Length: 328
Image 1 (cartoon, rainbow, N blue to C red):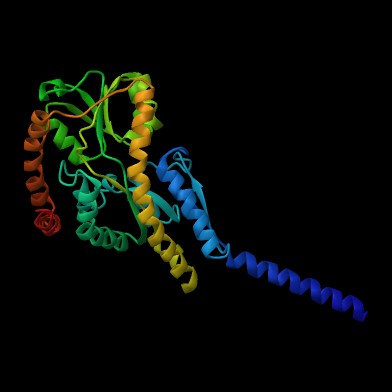
Image 2 (image 1 turned 180 degrees about the horizontal axis):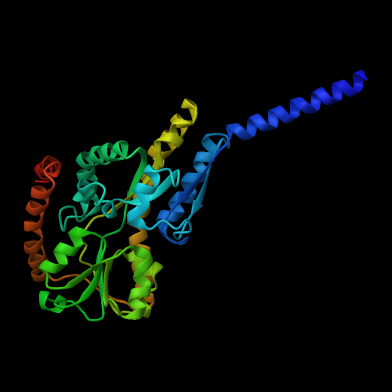
């Protein structure tokens, strides 16, 4: 009887330890709109592995790419806020319906290069963190896209070449800019772009080199003009309720991983542009840069939109003013 009791006690202890371990382990599904081959998705996989390693397997993140969880880009931040998903990759300039100030970095030609954007983020990032806190979440890291180009059926040499072009844009800033250029912008999330191109609903797209490869745009159009007119970034954001359930030790470990990896992810973005431009060219896309005359005309159309944005979003003005002061 004593042997049986000892065996039962050992089994009970083993079961208790197993249950405790299971309870201690946290598993999160991370929602992304981008496909597996996209560099943001690759970054997310690297981050998930680093988090698992840093927490000793106590926090496991499963990357759900390609909109697998049914969340469209503009819905991502609200989905994290409401706990529909614990963590998501969020395209910031698609969240302006929730927080208009998140449209700052997508103002045309405000921060057209990665160094410009890095400077802007010194003033913009606190605003992003403030919005996230108000929406019951915490931003872990932010990574920019490569410059935004224009894909079109014909070469774009002058503003006249844009007139009447039905072109997909991401946000209101893009819509306002391309209206000013004489085009016909259509705002839509990434998941609708390729079907719209295939159906002929749109003839052009403004997006990055990376997305041009993701969408195999050479099947639909032959030209890409490197306007590099807009910056945009993705943030990986976690629901605060889910975050607060973690131990302080795991929170600290994840923050350290995010801070370290964010710098490398910015480098990944710069390298991504070079690689994907080569792929587009190899598949028959003709790539051109705007002439100095066209670039000057584009900038002339862009600058009035900065003042319009500041008038609509007063909180954006000090961010933009401080950035432009240091940019000089």
